Length: 317
Image (cartoon, rainbow, N blue to C red; front, side, top):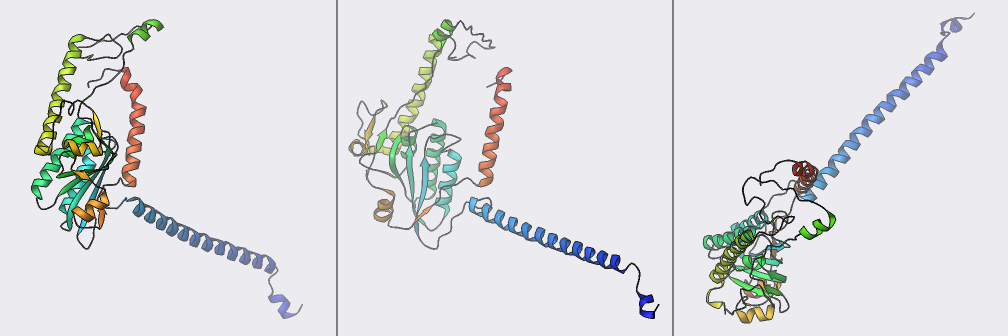
């Protein structure tokens, strides 16, 4: 056997295959590592874009380099989970605190809602007007400004409406249903145990108690009186009172001007251009971030899940 033949390992084919396999495995590992890196960077980039777009990191401030008209929206029912006092008040505060704000427009499209939430917004409007006397606040009505919506509008310097807007409904209501006769027909017996003679106040499954009904009526009259006082305070001598004004009736925008419930016709654009003299409009309405929306949905889901257990036990309300 020659010398070159002796130097060749008898397992050289196996060694070559092992090297090739090892190289292939290493290459796969490198490809997998680079793939994981690029996927991670891609997802991170998408999440950052999503969070920024949804307002996860967003602040409440709005920056604009020149004088402008600030806009705050009050849309829908005035309640803690919709057009809440916290949201509207925060938006108004941001609008007034900006030194470049020449005037504030509160655009209202609301049928009313909670007298507590409406009262809180009204009180804050009066406070901000006193704190920033050089910055006027005008209410502009879209489709409807009724009940609690008008309660809020009464705090503005002036109220502008469309001729077909619905304005008024200065009254208070407490509604519900009675099921006693239905229960009798179905053979259902109401078993209500209370500690406190009025704890089952106006229970819809029990007969109406005349004393409790009279008490509820008295309470509504008291809140109605507060509403009337707010309207008189806000509108002053502009108000042309009639016997029907505080009865809960509503009027068209055109008629509301004649009654002194509103000051004139106008839209957001016309008030900004012709009254405030600042055509640039900046929306200060506070928007829920993605985190707040997710938290709100989670809270609502948990509340629904807990309701059956809550109803089964003794609850203090």
